[in-house]
Length: 150
Image (cartoon, rainbow, N blue to C red):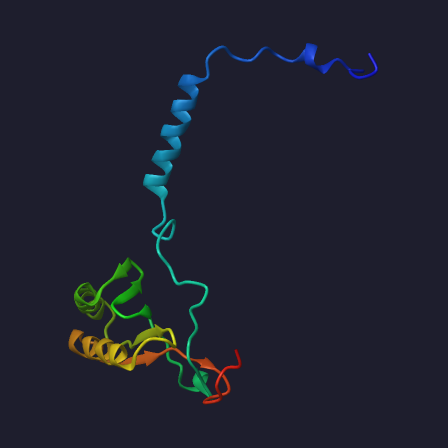
């Protein structure tokens, strides 16, 4: 009596005999909601935590409004709103976006480990696709050419 003073177990309803149908209905509804209302950002590839923009003194002074942003973490792997693309797919994507976003520049967020050759390829693709506003390179305002202390 001391261990169970209120005897709550006797006042509970007995559990239902069969949960199988309810379990399957719940699973089906959850799957339906993921399909209908899912986001392209759920389980989508993204930038790693080690992604770092290059630094430049006064980088924020030349900032411009952009509607088209791409991220480049390494060669031939470009992250756009629609997911990961390689350079062959990126060319078509840029042409499609240049038709929609007339006169705006393309913002390229490239990791500091990306080769200059890849940045040139991106700039050439953007010019051929029709980005008349040019290409903006994302940079962090910082100390300039002073190397990091690791």
